[in-house]
Image (cartoon, rainbow, N blue to C red; front, side):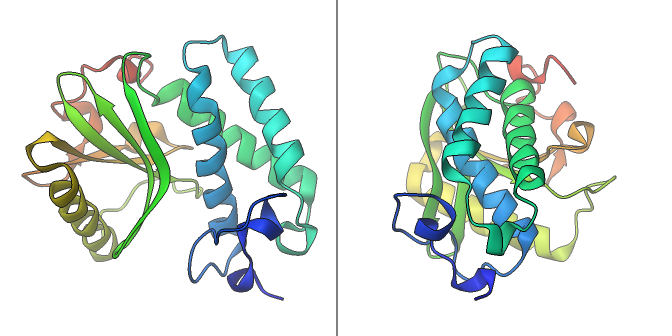
Length: 200
């Protein structure tokens, strides 16, 4: 059976909903699981890095079990935990931010994670777990971002701030797509002063 037929019950013990329609590659499976692990770690924001790393390790050990999809299970678990920890250390907002959810389904796809950030509004995070050196802003990414922005505006109206595109292995390449306006470097955006940018 290929990855496109997998359900979360196959990848994550004890669950039943599908991870993502059309899932067909190892990298997509790793990405989806990294989103879920990051969501689990959201409650530990503000904890020391060692605590977050331990929680990530425990989560992947308990939930990432499908050898037929992930092949080398220790390697897959390490990559999932590393991606989730990278997100938490570099990009997760402060404790005063409200976590809205992860893998949020809508007609145009799934939202990786969403936060309601004081003084800014709702921000959608799109995590990129591939090993890009540069985050190319191509037509596919522009189309995806447009769908996410449309969903954000429809869902939260004036309370929607924008979409962050976060390549976890190359954080300096992160981008921000405001609710109104073109994509720009995250470091140059209106949300660059939020504490999560301190390490960039």
